[in-house]
Image (cartoon, rainbow, N blue to C red):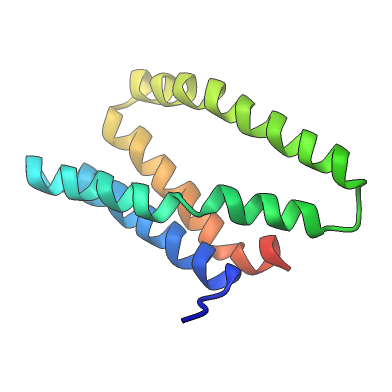
Length: 116
């Protein structure tokens, strides 16, 4: 079954958002474990799909585009943890994780734009 990049990114982002919300909203260790499994399944395909879209775009030279995307990815890894900690300090860890779920919903909403 050929699912397609757009559908895969859309469904994966929804799956990851649902996993985060499950882990945050249901006070059960089993639900939290299932939530993190859903996050892994949902988010696992995002990076390859985004790198494929970066390689197919026509705006920038491919070598510069891939370098920029890699730099943005590493910056996200470094800044993401600090941002989650900052939001948690201001409010709670549940709010910080819910913010990540909202960002996954933004990815789902823009899946067609990302993969065109």
